[in-house]
Amino acid sequence: MKRLILALDVYERERALEIAECTADYLWAVKVNWPLIIGSGLGIITELRQVTGLPVIADLKLADIPNTNRLIARKVFDAGADYIIAHGFVGREGVNAIMELGETIIVVEMSHPGAEEFIQPATDKLIELANELEPFGVIAPATRPERVAYIRSKLKPGIKILTPGVGAQGGKAGEVLKAGADYVIVGRSIYASENPREAARNLHREIAGV
Ligand code: XMP
Image (cartoon, rainbow, N blue to C red; front, side, top):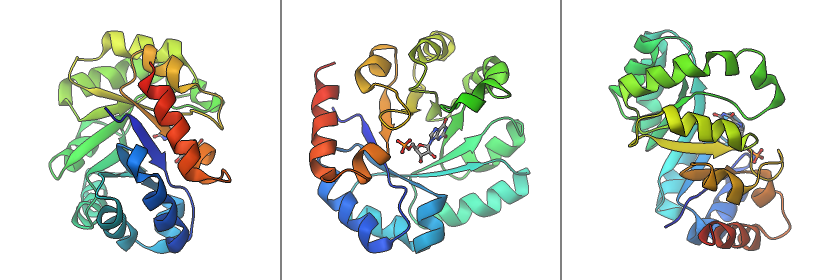
């Protein structure tokens, strides 16, 4: 089973397509974030799906009023995104507006040190929200495997846990998968390496050994 998600945070269309194509064999999905969408346009989502045949996750971390979330999500799903990442702290209506249009992933805790300031104190409530709305998955920090284990213990079984923070931010794929994550999200350790295909293959092998 493939459990690796590529965070494709480059600006240039050609480079993005090249890296996605050469790593696709080892990926479950490709994640696009604002840098690539700003650099290459929304059409990159359609192209990535065509080139890789993989699901595309749009990591927009949407956090707006329901109507604006809906307006944005509609265009992004129309472009071919299979999943959208959204913040839950704006309230259930904001998340629901996206879920009515397609598969959604809710951030319940972030991977950077600053997550301890505001998001971590709200994690229990965000888990409750996820359990109520039953999205495809939640985002949890690969940098804190103990928090992933905690989130897994509170989350309804069918809801997937996707964890950014492996590699450049210090998280270890094996540790976080053992803690209960379903997928690991890796950006710089793959796309900024000299040989992205080899970097993805090494991570894929590490994951397969868990
Ligand atoms: P790196 O280069 O650090 O890239 O491997 C990680 C990717 O994941 C995103 N990211 C997050 N997304 N919650 C999220 O929804 C998080 O806590 C989080 N931490 C990292 C980051 O923007 C990049 O695309």
